[in-house]
Image 1 (cartoon, rainbow, N blue to C red):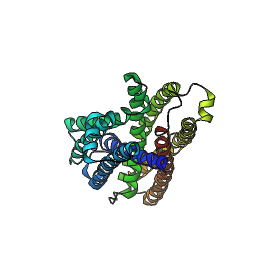
Image 2: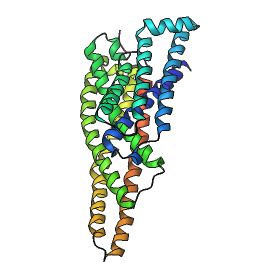
Image 3: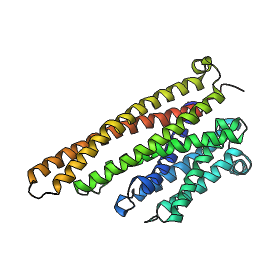
Length: 314
């Protein structure tokens, strides 16, 4: 039960942090900065609140699991004098800062730089108390942080885009849907490709720190969790590849066909048919993205499980 609680709380924290980073990516890169393309403010407030509350509860649970009790004085001392407590303090402050900037109606240069820095700092508070940090070196911690930044930018951006596209109450004209949607997926595809390269390089380097033999993979809980995570990542890459090289090009062709036919007012029937095809193509692409998002949620859960397992070495 204790292991399940630890893995669940870590998964929830990682998910909230990744989605907050994803909203930064969504507003600053994937979607135009028009007001009606902003995610609802309640999303940001809810994610920030959950991340802070779960971080504090997880800290209190860890104190109690070690000492058998927890008091306000003990918790305050833990916050001030331990690496974990300091990380929770910094995380809470950075989450509040990020929330304040994300709630701005329009992004300016300095606000975008500020919220990007806050998002990167939030991710670092996880790496600062990770398995890599326990190795005792700054290079290992930075390697873990780089891996987390790349994963959150890709997975968080995808999740935020899928949630926004699925739940938004705004319903623009079909031409605006296609142009905005296809353009954002194209940007996400480029971001995902860069992220995958970083993830592969940093993942291999990180694995070499903790896995020095095949028996570690099959004979320890850490190794089994790593195998499950990697299998899910491979499945995600397969779906992402289909999106990039199959569904996205098809959606682009349908968009170009619609644009060309809509330019002629004498081809109303063809234009209507093109709109129907285009809408079907956009839905097919969105469906594929939803499957990719579902697998990425499973990857987050596997990561939460992995990061709460004891390291397979001293």
